[in-house]
Length: 436
Image (cartoon, rainbow, N blue to C red; front, side):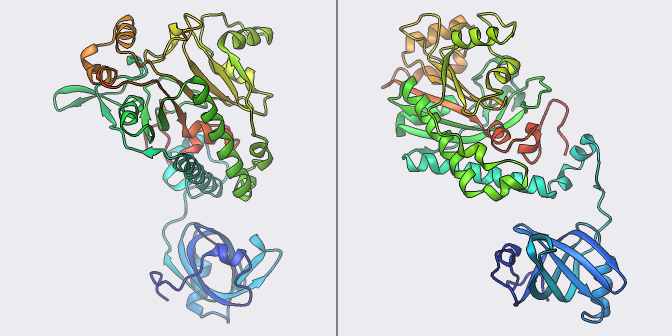
């Protein structure tokens, strides 16, 4: 049997009851193995599931039986046999093997139960094979597909921003600087400003790309490198922007809750938590949010931005996400338009996930008048020469517009009910982790 042939059956097809009584070939990696006397049990996994293979001496060749007895966890192997129903086996089916061979036996797998977090992070390239992380990464992929489809269905265009830039989007203190052929440049904090350029050609656009923040944070929701979904829409105001965000979050929660309930349950997340997300979402002004925090015993003062503790307090008992809008101009980004009806505040919004997970989206109306934008940039002492191209967008056919940024990993942390953001991305980059 050649492991490269196309005569192999996916394990999920067996577990779906499509192969009972049939002779099949499967290939994959050893999830568990044990043997006693003349019987070896090898639980094999592929990308679609796991199945128990019973390898009996005398039924298979001596060489096949010895191979089955000698495998390690994560050895790669291929098995032929007959599918039979067995409620005691994982998934309810077992393969009565007629042949077994290793593709690569390898070395004893270094990861066992009760390993430290640091050890698991050092061996992340191997720990990704664990059942929980495998299922989380599947759910992450399905979530991204669902988000993409949401925008495709609404006639958005997806475009690619540059990763290397001269322009800071969210403030210079969190930039990763690099030498770009003798000139300073930075890893992008956000592709938003480039999305604004695309927007003036195609009206409704979105980008999905990595962003980088040099924040010295050690919290369960911060990464130095994360994936950023950033739509930008011409002729949108604050109300339309927030409604789009709400529709998007409802869409993805309903999609994942309905269509991937099995995966959610496998990682310990009840699908009903996502199916309960239906909107309309509660909306609080920044001022109302501060008042509510203070009523709940928080020491925050008016004029301070909400932090992780305040966000957790506001959302710990919530079922729906909560919008906080109209933050103070003093601590928000330079490109956010001031509310003409409430001086000192901007037409911003943050969307906080329930159950204490905190901010998952930040958005706003953008300043679209060149003079207003230049004045705001001067207030914040930004180097205008590095942003001339961005100012140009306001000089040639500028229009009212709005947009937002969604952190993929933060959304996944909440939707999948995870304790730490590091488990939402294959190779997390944090203040103390850049290996492997």
